[in-house]
Structures are given as structure tokens and as C-alpha cells.
Image (cartoon, rainbow, N blue to C red; front, side, top):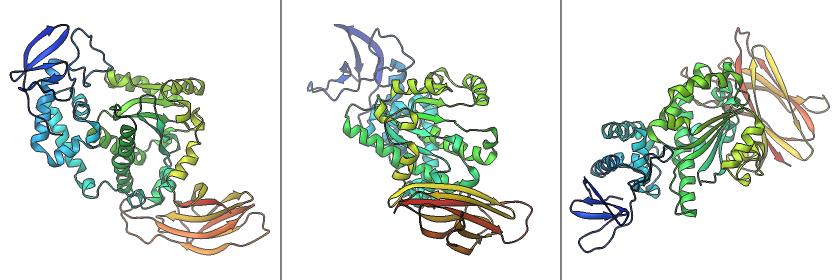
Length: 448
């Protein structure tokens, strides 16, 4: 909402213990501006109360600003309203529901209330958002990725789950399970970034707005992050993986500043714990104060429950909610998928895998790839009692050479396989080759 421009003078006085500021000849008392008719506008509560010491945990937030910071705030507000349009949309990326003081202070904190740097940051963010904005930030996640979201998320598990005690959504990311070879079978770098825009501008934004509807006093448009490094190895941190993480981090830091309420890095491997000692020295004290690295499950479960109620956490993170892997499938798939199984087959000459079904289950099998060499696939009974269920299925990618821009080949090789049973999926290379080609086997499993 646009508000009238005001300039704050340097004169302050204390009357009856209340800090008063004179603004353009008007009196502003306890955050309320008095107009000529003695009507009062809604409280802004920008300045830190007189005599209250500075607190690094509330620095830069509404109600905790110094006189100099209030001046910068007002100038930034004027600039945002003067420019309007895309520039203003960038600042209010989570909607008007965030409220002017909270939205503006979030951007100002990101550049430590240096007005020129904040203005430049919003300009750069507006430019970065320009192309995604034309596509409405990709509101359909499947169109953004080019594949069912639950198939992609099985290769890079991430989800929002419940809310913290402070009202902020809880975001769980599992980079230790990131499988870059599988990701490249099902999607492309550009599409991964498109999906990230969807996640921020639709998924996260909607959760913030829903929380605001439930609690009108909720103003902290940020999230609690659980970064689960279980299974992380040095080999996973290759250039392809890091390019994705780097681009996502760039977008978040530029276009969605100050949206981390707290981060818990859990199940950290030894090599990361040693590296963290160095990394924390590169960060400012305020950021470090909001991050914790916890390796022991007993320690991190107890710590998480100090910030998040037990019913707001999945069972695999010490809560009473549905397991996070099950939630990913349920929230990101169509139909009534009970569970899913995905696995990469790296084929030079031949390779196979076996998938087990329980009684009362049925399964579809789909293969994703960008392998121009191709392979011939079959599905048989692993115990040689029934079948074959699929034979001589040619899976050969025929797209262009720029794999980062190409959608994958998708071939459903079998459907309605009925359990109980063990089913062998085998791929045989169409020709002799020196290097392996990757094929992602994706199995959707339903109740029969």
C-alpha cells in the first residue's frame, strides 16, 4: 500500500516516557502519526523504543530501527512507490499480505540499510525475475519440470512440512540424496530452475499467505530450514551439482532476501563439519547465529523440538507426522500412488534391477533417458515363473545435442503388474560402447 512520504528530523524528546518524533511539523507518538484533525493512522512502530538496548536478533526489524534506519526506510519506501510496476512487485514478491514495514525492512536488512545498495539490489532482482514473471513463475510444477514432480523429487528430495512455533513454514531439503545422474535423465538444468521459481513464488508464497490468514499477527515471512546431509559424499559435489545449487542460491539471496528464520544442518558428515569451521568465518555474525550444525540424531531431534511442535514434524525427523518420503509422493503425484521406486541403470553392455511387489499391489514402469545410444528393455519374472511382461522395448533418445535444453524421452514399458512377485527390469545396449548411458527406471506402485 502506498503511503505518504515523510522526512524525519533529528530532534527527539521524551514525554511521559514515550519517545516522540516530529515529522513534517506533525507529532508522531508511539508509532502513530497525528494529522491536523487529530486522527491517527495505523501504527507503524518503526523505531526502537527509547532506552531499549540493541539486540542483534531483532536488528533491522520494524520496531527496532535507529533514527538513521528509519530515515533510510522512508526514502526506500518513497523510491518503491515512485517506481511502482515491476520494481514494486519485486519488493512485495510475497504479496501485500506481508505488510509494508516487514517487506521493506526485509530488503533493507539484506544490504544493511545502505540505501543505494538496496535500490541496486531490487533493480537486479527485478531483471532476474523478468523472464520467469512473463511465465507467471511457472504455476504448474509438472510443466516447469517436464516430468511428474514426485519423480524429480525422488532424485532431490525437498518439501515443506508443517510450521514452526514462530509460525514460519518448515522446509526440509536432503542434498545427501541428490542424484545428479538421475536428475539429468528426467529433466534439464533450465527446468530445474523453473521449478525453483514455482517453489518460491507459488508453493512457499501460498504457505506464507495461508499462515497470515490463520494468524493476522504472523509477520515473519521466512522459513525454518532443515538441511539433511545424511549420505552426502564429496563425489556428489561435482560441477553439475554445484551449478544447480549455485543458481538456486543466487536467486534466493537476490530475489527473496532475509527469508531464513533458522537453519539446522543435521547428519553432517565429518568432512562437512570440518569445513563448517572455515565457512562460518566468512559469514556475518547475525547469519551464523541463525545456523546450527548438528551431527548426532539425539542432539538434533531434541533441538528441532525446541522450535517445532512434534505434530509439525514427519516421523523420520522425530515427529508424529507422516514420513517425509511418503509425503513427497502424496503431495506431488496424480492418482492414488501408494509409493514409488526409482533407480538409475548405467548401461554399457547390459544391466538389470529387481523390484518387489507385495500382495495387493500393482505397478507401472516408466523409463526416462537422454541416451542417444539407446538400449532394448524387457520385464520378466525374477523367479522365472511367469511372463515375460515386456520384450524388445526400444528406448533411444532422438532429441538434439544440447541436453540442457532437451526434454527427456519417456517410455512406459509395462503397466498393471500385479503382486506379490519380483520383477526383473533389464536393459541391453544396442551397440558396443566405451562409456555407460544412464536410464532412470521409475515405478509407480498402487493398491490393487
